Image 1 (cartoon, rainbow, N blue to C red):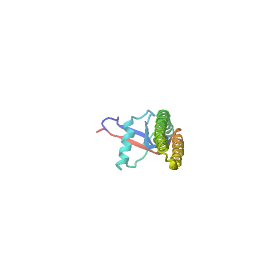
Image 2: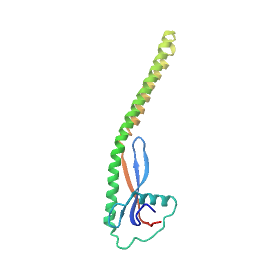
Image 3: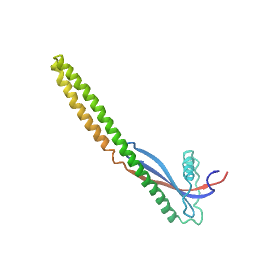
Image 4: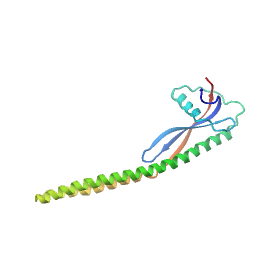
Length: 175
């Protein structure tokens, strides 16, 4: 790399899963240097790129590394990111739920108006024999709205979970 300081870093790879309206899964990384300082984000990006390209090579843990405090530091970095992201995504999710609720209700109201207009037309033309079909459609629209709102409500409380997948020593060399 020409942008990341040369050296060795301990990097954890984690799978983050969000369960809100727009559910998604993504890989996250966090890294620290031997002295416990947070590694530049490019180190984790490099690990992901090497993983995607199948360029990872096995190697020993460098001498003199005290892994226990470094692992605690990695977990803290990921936990901070999780809290920040969950707060942001929760607010975004709430706005999405409300926007979709408004859209559902507007669509429902439009469909109800159309059915009511058909009922009015049938009454004006004295074709009351088929009005019960239109009334059934009205009841069906209310049921469909209730089901859609229940599905939407089930996505209101999103959750962000982070599962640690692997820990690697990443060696960055200057170009």
